[in-house]
Image 1: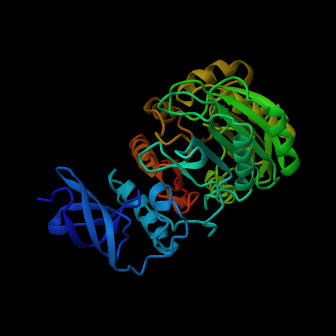
Image 2: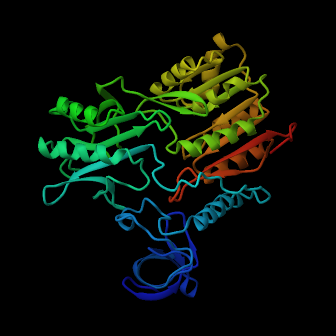
Length: 462
């Protein structure tokens, strides 16, 4: 039996999606931080459970051929880039295997999994960053990310995954905070003002949004900050405060105050100009999202005659990119700001065959019943699903199976819940086509997947 602080020499034979290498001395699973498959390593046991143990790498004795140089100074402490020490070819194989296993665990053994699609852009692809801020022991200010399994802020304003436009803005804000002695939030005492710095960029337009999350209702010397930011960074279109006075680890509060600009930015995706608010969902990897949405449109097999129902539609990016190929588009989204953005996005793109309604997609049946007075009988031919990580509510899947759209195109950031929901739909009369993974989150343990589910009477699949 292993004990805490035991030192072992092991072969690393596998890796999980959290970035832990896996060794099995005497058949007992040990998850090892800092190790990758192919390593021979000296490790120290730091935690022992009934069925597994956790260890850290003390020394790499033989380097794996899958290793690559990790140039990030905080990656070992941060843990955000699960695959930072792996070459990308091996990362791709791990993600493809993980998607396959998600479906196998649901008993969907005959499913075809396509090769992972990616842009090969491994760094600086994220168009959105939320950076916690804290005071260090020597009175300095740290801006970066939380250390793994803690709320200790690692100073890293130049994260290798974030857009390069963010780092100089963060550096300027840090100077402002120190010069004007602006307090930063302390999670233990709940005192202090600035909690997070939130940045977004529209890569096609270059427009940047800056949002400061504060525990209060005003920012001292806000006019000085606006002057500095707008003079030094003319791409910044909007500067906002987000008010979050709750004792919570949720980053954003419900209320925004606009300090400069109109509180939005614009980006272009799949040929559609999109208005984006700070609360709106928008894919963090624009280039890879374009590839994903084009595949979704292909799987939808639209002819121009369909009523397309876009559930969890956000600012309308997916549905609007297909609107020119359908008779009517109806979108459902729970965030009111996003619904207004979707309506505005339809208007500015000259799309007149779209309508958007605010509500929980799980209650789509009731929402569409209420909308029937203006829409008429709503019986979608094709449904787009893009739910959060938890997947779709069973009541929604039941209703869809009763409505019997001929085709469902399901996009997910969680292969596990997609596989679960796909199994339920196959039991309700749908045939699952090829599953296509897309790497929107290079160097991390996540990927997006898209597939189509076809009513049995229509067996044409890609």
